Image (cartoon, rainbow, N blue to C red):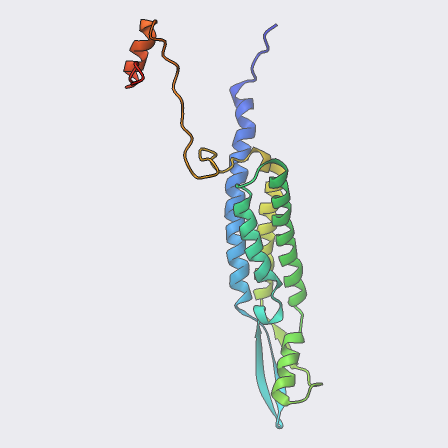
Length: 209
């Protein structure tokens, strides 16, 4: 008994979901990396140090507080591109790396949102007292912007883990040496006139000369 093919709407469902998840993953991953990198270059905390009887203002950028978000943003962006260069198990491993990059950015940014170590070091240098600490400490919203960037990368990784097997890979038209594969046309039988006419229609020489 011949199997009845599924309705077109059912067959197109997984393909449509794969295309939609691919678009969302690309957008969220690239945007998340850009947001995380931008956030690490902004001011995360500020305070004052007592120097020669006066208060000296101090500020710390995200990169001063922690270098983890910026490093993982670059790793995540590379993993996002690498997802399309590998297949099967390799793709799942890269997707897992993408997911862990996003989670790492979120964790590091949340820890840095209340960190005072970077400003304490500046206070010690400014005052010449290694035990000096910053006071009137305050934080900006930029660490939470980095958290949002990490969450977008995390979303891209989760989508890659869930739908990555159905995503397209880089074209395999080229061999390892970079030369394009030669597509061989149908074999022309000189004893069959219909083969000769078909070859002529394709613009081929049926004699093979």
